[in-house]
Length: 347
Ligand code: SF4
Image 1 (cartoon, rainbow, N blue to C red):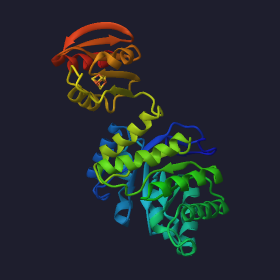
Image 2 (cartoon, helix red, strand yellow; image 1 turned 180 degrees about the horizontal axis):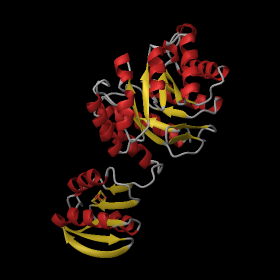
Image 3 (cartoon, rainbow, N blue to C red; image 1 turned 45 degrees about the vertical axis):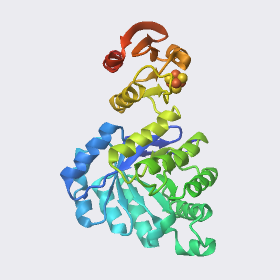
Image 4 (cartoon, rainbow, N blue to C red; image 1 turned 135 degrees about the vertical axis):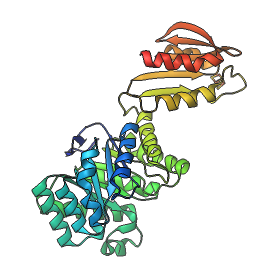
């Protein structure tokens, strides 16, 4: 079940059954407004719904107003140690601040909540296995799922006791199992929206797989309201991976789903080349289409009949193309990509 409570981060609704939103984070120097704004534009065009910028200095919070003005999507400020940065960010008008309460004093949290109440905006309680409160960690000996859950509950209570309820929660670890177990437990204990992710998941290939397993397992259980894939890679790859996770679970509206086969000795057309190029072409398109491209008629006919655009190898170097279940044309291998792109554009 999605969270019972719904919060707003700027124009984006999170939780309470709202569509699962995709987040990412800039890795520019936030003080460099042009570079940061350019990266936010890149992320927005790739399909990012919410963007986070880190604010370690007063110089970085001082430019937030300009960054906000340039951004078409809500901006979240990431504050780790200094509560004053969070207050400055909130006063600048950011839509959310991400705090890690394990790194903050009680007074700091009180001041942040006061600023959020006075100026609007939401908070993410970001529990991370690497920064759980010492008092909790000493009892669990290791940053286990249970330790993260206890820390999350404790900090939800702190915000509730201050009369603040406009927040979401994350419990992330670089350990996939710990992250999944923590979120499963949390989803039973709190009604607040959950932000999912595997922290520091690694480079593009291993990080995408870890994230897909962790985030995907939770989404399959109906848990989670917003996601971030954290990769040691560029921002568009993070968003691409996040979109693919949602696409794979039919949780992304208006996207193109491409079915292609792994190829074998029966392959009659250049599947790998065509499917890779089509993936790139369709990546951030906002259309609801299913395209199948298979190397031969073994499964190709059935898939083509159930696709908006179906392509399969018919004889060596030749493909049959179906449109919504009806045979449309027979084309040469070298013409498939161009024709399918035209058909996508026409749909
Ligand atoms: Fe091989 Fe045909 Fe299956 Fe592709 S669809 S893997 S070419 S049998």
